[in-house]
Length: 204
Image 1 (cartoon, rainbow, N blue to C red):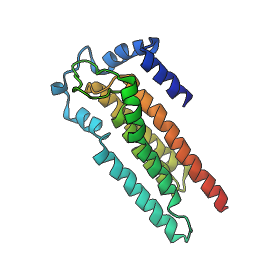
Image 2: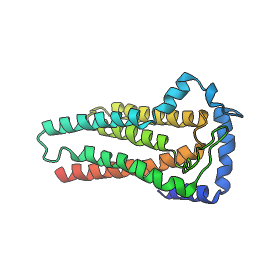
Image 3: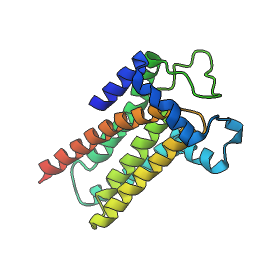
C-alpha cells in the first residue's frame, strides 16, 4: 500500500515518475498506437480484464471452494469465498474513487469521452488481478503438491502480466495505470489471504 500511495501521489502531482510512462509504452506498443491495428490475440488478452469474463472465473473458484469445504463438515465453509468476494467488490469502489481524483488522460490516440473520470488506476487490470489471483489462491488450498501450487501461482501472474501489457499495447492505458492497479490489488489479495489464514488457524 505504501508503494501504491507513492505512485498515486506521483500521478496526482504529475511527478517525475510519470516520465517512465512514455518510454515503457513505446517499448510495448511502438511509437504510435492505433486501436484499429491491434491483433485479435492482443485484443483478446486485453479483454480478459472485462468483468463479465474475469468475475465468473473467480465465482467458479468460490463455488468449488465452498462445495469442497462444506463436504468436510466445516461450520464456516463460506468464509474463504467471502473474503475474496469482498476483495472483488472493493475493486470498482476503489477504482471509481481514485479515477476522478487523479484524472489521468489517455495515451496516444485514445480520446476520453466527455465526463469520463480518467484512467488511473486501470479498472481492467484491477479486475483481472483480483479475479485470476483470487481464483488461484482459493484453488491452491486443494493442491497437495507444492510444485502444483507454484505452477498455478505462476500461471496467474503471467496471465495478469499479459493482460496488463496488452492493455498498454492496445492504447487503453499508460503502463503506470496498470502498475497502480497491481499494487492496489496486491494489497486486497494479501488482506483476503490473511483473513483466510487467520480463519484456518482458528480452526486448528
